[in-house]
Image (cartoon, rainbow, N blue to C red; front, side, top):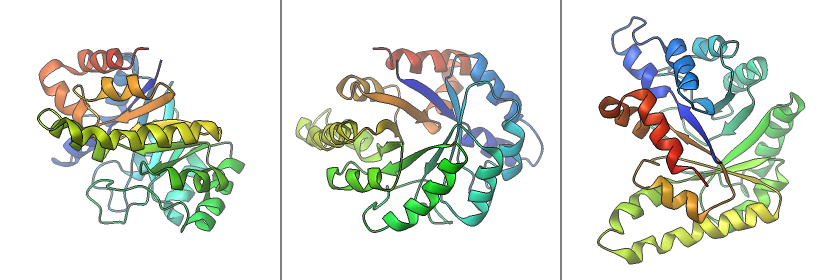
Length: 243
């Protein structure tokens, strides 16, 4: 079954809004594991507006499932990742002021940079995934850079899925995802996915990309938890990922 990694950035955003420790990010992460999630994802940014670098260090000894750290490979980020040694590092081409991730890597243009960074991470035994737009032409360069997996950027898919309710032709975009996943699989790359996946669009994505190894979901899952409760919401998402 495809694994569910829960991104806890929004929990940290809520904590930071009041300057105290409510909610307790570390305890929530442990509870998310206890409620059935297969992993925890964090995406620390330079301004630490949600997850702080100290959170990342404090989470590592507490977590019992897979730990995935996302981010742009600045020197500060790389130093932290090399010290924490998560199970997986997902490289994202975010500028420092980005509100959220909104595109994948141009693996052709930045192949040399990626190769150096990935080599450093893999020397520490860290699995590496590259955030990628659904473009077949970028897959071979992702493989050549040394990545173990790609994470398909699913923002465009989520937007078109909503439109397809009244304009089914819009979902033709999904062919790009299927073809990119097929190419990656043929080259021995694992497939992850993330961004704007939710209870409405997740099942379709899973059914049509059966090689999907892992999804990382934060914003929608935490929003749903306001209505359904965190434990129940995690189970609802896991059901969407069943084979």
